[in-house]
Length: 222
Image 1 (cartoon, rainbow, N blue to C red):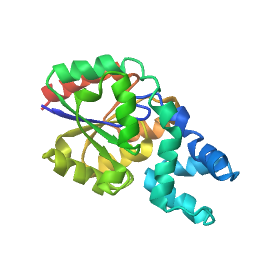
Image 2: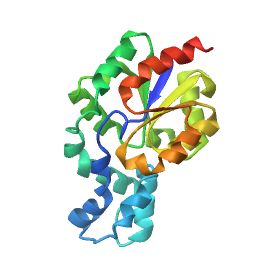
Image 3: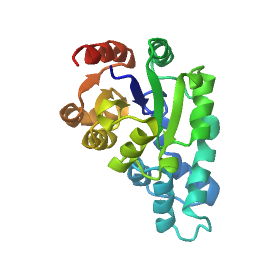
Image 4: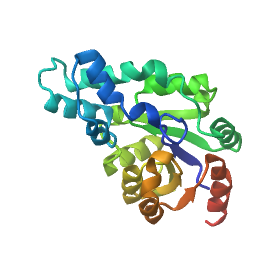
């Protein structure tokens, strides 16, 4: 039985992708008075917050903050909106059903723990998760297989026995390279990459509620 299930947060559990679409640009404009080009947020989309802070610092050295302070600044800037973000359709029901069925659930995210805890607590499911592995804490973004290897070590089982539930192509590619089972979930922000996603993932779910039946089938096929 694949009993350890890891969830990405943004775009899988939370309908939070619109918040990230312009977060860095708004932060620079409102906090530092800098008009950044619109592509800045697209460049930051596949980075951890700390990597994004390092990137912003390299572009705007006039900002007298460290990359860590910039990352914390962006996280704090969006916090009020983030913790009130709605769930993806059927998320809470699916998470509770998996927990009750005996699965151990984890979170793997580039977002900061305080924001994620606030949002999932508001939706009543924070306590369903055994642990959270942020890119900041692990020290690698989800672009690196080392991220997943360290997560597996902390959970205490090999990568091949973990299921990663994900919506972002770049994270799926790395998780697959690390040896995890990849369950892709539809997200509008990634829909243009659906063809590539189908080549990488083990299963493509149109909605999160399709996950429990897939996990049951996966265990039966062992």
